[in-house]
Length: 606
Image (tube, rainbow, N blue to C red):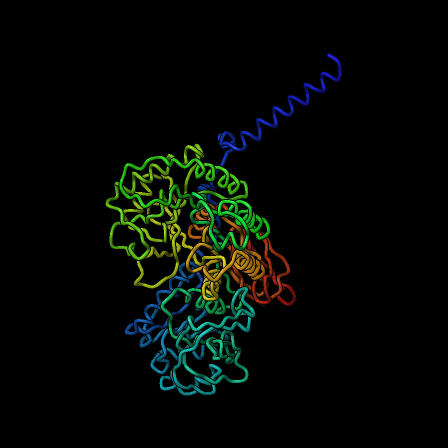
């Protein structure tokens, strides 16, 4: 065989191999070759630490047991301290309590300051270098003689309602200069005039002081001069105030940013959508493939995002079996092509449902959404079994760990059905905040008794409102979680009638850029990775020893690096057992990698 013939055969073989590769890439053979996996971490390799007998940091809470809002605030503050692995003692305002050197700070949850039996002791505590936080709006008739001046107040007026937010200082983590005007976000407060040496930390849009601090002797008072709102923003507000009770306050956070794409992969709407076609000249399927999905992948790379895509098989309204395999081959192709690209970008797949009918019997307000209630739990299970077959055919052996309920509605029957058909299910992701009268599935961050995780989403959409962003940033300050979701078809919604694709794209980029600028330390995570971080956050424990030279932390029950927030203005000279990243003048992000972690202060602290 001469050299020319060998070259011809070489070219032929190369073309054949490449042709086969590209043909396979269009089909699902490669799925059998690719080890697609989720990221649940087993909490098996515990690390231990000595000195577990060191006492937890202790804080005093004074509240009014006859005041519903005071009791509610007490429960919120106690939960924050529990999450932070700190101790607190709650006493009624009419009870005398002694404060010794073990007390790290005082929290007062009543406006009846003249009736607080321990108020003279609190004032002495602050004068001697302690910090006290008053988390109720002030009332002139309930102010003890001489206390108003110590709080940095020169006059107290009438109660009023204010709206909007301004953050002039660095009380919050990452929010210096944050502001928005909105009549939809309001709170009750008391009009006050502050002394010239009071430091304003948070105001309403019109400048009304809502949070301020004031020196008194060697210590400080913080005042949150606002009535409680009917939402969970107080977890963030209270956390940032509590973080000032000690000049070197440390607390753990989960450290994760989560992005869910609901209804994706899913059947792509056929034909043209007039607004999309007029703006882009593309049919709906072309818009998904050529504009929307490339933009999402570009954002994932540029802003370090890991998507969790929530699969849906059909948009039909069938709620009674038999549930037949989908005849639409294009939908299956979308599951393979889009799902594979999502996985390759570092994301993972979860489920939204067989269809978009919320897994709930009658009585959950489905009618207002045009949904059909399910007749029984058995029907839900049958539909989910068809969904499981659909996924298994495209992704053999792939484990599904996360579930997002359609329209965030989920009944106990629906939850049982999901767990029965997908026994490996770990994460339920719905909503964090909402009205108490609503029928949606609202969650707190928690681990259930069966080992599953409640991992709520905080914000949503390509152009989220200022109120939503404010709420999301409060949660980051509370426990270090940013959790957001979008849909691929939001531009078709009635709520989006005044938006264009260009505006939605810009809105998403602006949100992501602002988040990355303010919270550069947040780490991307999929839903199952988030479950692992939540497990580590709740399972670990730690103790702290302080000295003029620095801080020593002893940490145990952890199998991955942990993140802590340190609120301090001191300069760090060195760190042992991890790292410290300064993120603003009065805050560090600590990464703890060893059971013994130590900080040495610079300058006089050496």
